[in-house]
Length: 342
Image 1 (cartoon, rainbow, N blue to C red):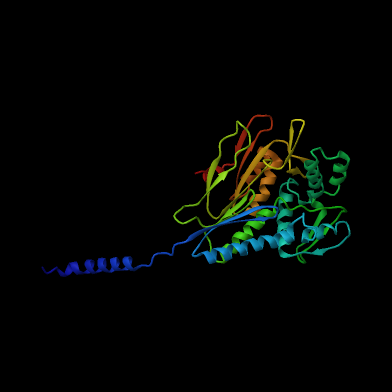
Image 2: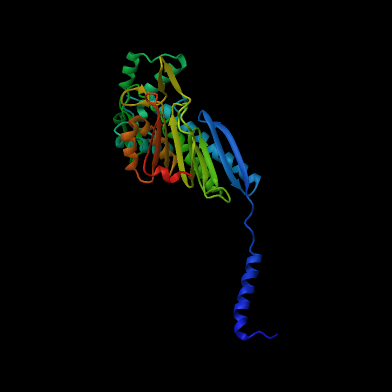
């Protein structure tokens, strides 16, 4: 049977389209790699998808190496770190040139200290050290020593010179503590390493801090569990879906001091020098983990009303706070947080 000429065009187009579809190469299958190493005093975990095992192993090793490098720069535990050396210059009138990494973290920390009215303050190190000792010895810090330590605390005692990237610590006995921000920065940097190596489908977690890139194959995002408060009447665990975002959680689940029925968190209010006592967990979702990590401390210190108000005024950020100040569980969420729930 002879087809009319008017049929030939659509038929040939259909055949051509069918041929192109059948011959289009399938995307290469990706393997899932999962890695864990102790870094910065806690477990760091990487989950990634790569074309082969060699690429996965090499990328994970490079990401962990970046975290080790940052620990050598930003740790207040390591006596030879760049941060510790800077702290030892306090009160000596020295303007100290610092590395790009330390400058970036200190600049972001000082900006947040000003915006939060000192609720976030990396100069809180002298008080934090006394609370670390108190947890080891299971007794309250000595009030006289705590009062003395507070004399060296205050973000206004840090002078940054943006033209020369120098830092001057203005009063004696200062000790910078980047524990509320450095881990988030390290998570971000590790994810950047994976992305530069072509592995965009990845997750990096360090303790309660996590950042994710593209979702796993066939998924719309990464399904992340929110840790529940350790109380019998606490709400059950919830889950959020994240892509190209970060989440950080801070609270007193693991590090705390309990005396005479009172629970003191390892999180210290820089304005008072005292450990927080409201038994809370704060989760913040943000575009990057440095932001999420540092803002969990702001919300924890300021509390639900002032803390969540500050979150509402911060673009692209959401927060959730679960607390039990008087044996009664309270849950607070910013307006943007519920959009991430599964």
